[in-house]
Image 1 (cartoon, rainbow, N blue to C red):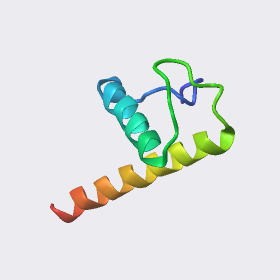
Image 2: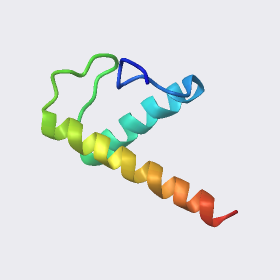
Image 3: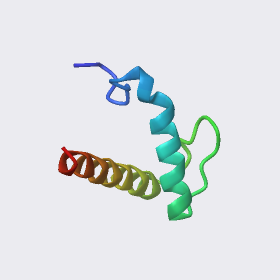
Image 4: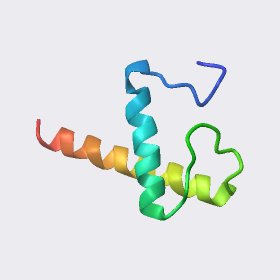
Length: 67
């Protein structure tokens, strides 16, 4: 298991994850900057992460349904 829990397990997905994070933040009305965003509220970061997971699960469910 990687020592950094924020590590991307599939490096090719790095840009897609970055784009998803910014898309979700925009939908939630949370302003993210390019680069470091450690100054946003924990509540906002949690909302972004939770909604990212929700979107990824929905995408996987759609993919599984189409098999």
